[in-house]
Image 1 (tube, rainbow, N blue to C red):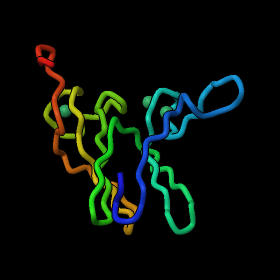
Image 2: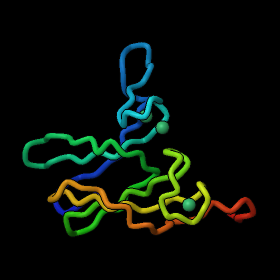
Image 3: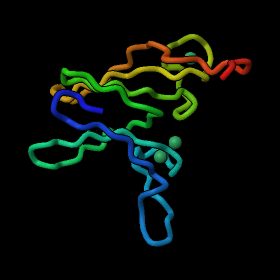
Image 4: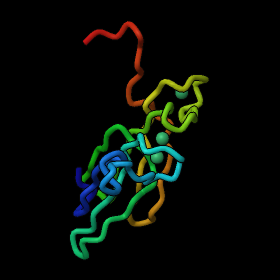
Length: 115
Ligand SMILES: [Ca+2]
Ligand SMILES: [Ca+2]
Ligand SMILES: [Ca+2]
């Protein structure tokens, strides 16, 4: 997913690390179970680890990358609706290098959901 010219991607912690395949804790939360958002600078080739877990990313023509973050991954009620089962959008602004919780649930995982 692109944010302007930059490429955003998810790095699987479990795929990183040494020959034992032990993984690397890329977001610093103490486990190696996450997919962590990163951005690639096309000019320098440098990769910035945003240190935020996400289930998916959405790009834009502007310099904003949307991170879809599961509340269960960080035990945080991002949209403040009283539960921990939402996937909530966070906007990463690569110019300001900040991530803002937009408190917008991307989708709820209803137990009865079809499909
Ligand atoms: Ca982790
Ligand atoms: Ca985790
Ligand atoms: Ca919630």
